[in-house]
Image 1 (cartoon, rainbow, N blue to C red):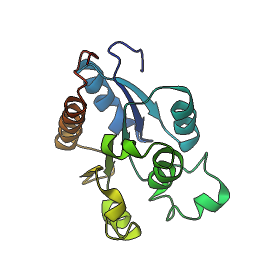
Image 2 (image 1 turned 90 degrees about the vertical axis):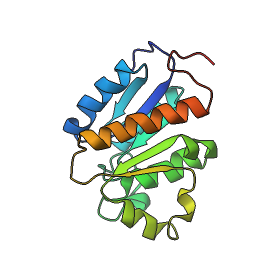
Image 3 (image 1 turned 180 degrees about the vertical axis):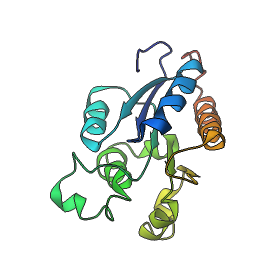
Length: 160
């Protein structure tokens, strides 16, 4: 994963292998370079060391890599991905909101936590209907990612 074959780099925060395995394969066939982070510590390392163009994030993630005070804000882990994005990504590079897809069963909890979603403007939200994404949800993610890339002028071959 993440072999730099096309130049459009995606960070995928997902701890469920059955969700990321097929989606990563499909995205790489579409020309995206995908790095999977199965916990926040890995996501932080990738964010700090690689150029990330887009993020796909599950909310319900293991909190490893968050500070103790941040862990208490995760809602028993259901919003761990959001705590990471808000503190470590959007605070440094707010434009990433327009380049983020949240794929999670906990979208409603997130909306409640963020003033009925006002802080979510620009972020593509896709609700998982089960613990793992199904084919329709994966297609929604692929289409949303391609749309975002095209909107930003990044073709699938990595050229402007």
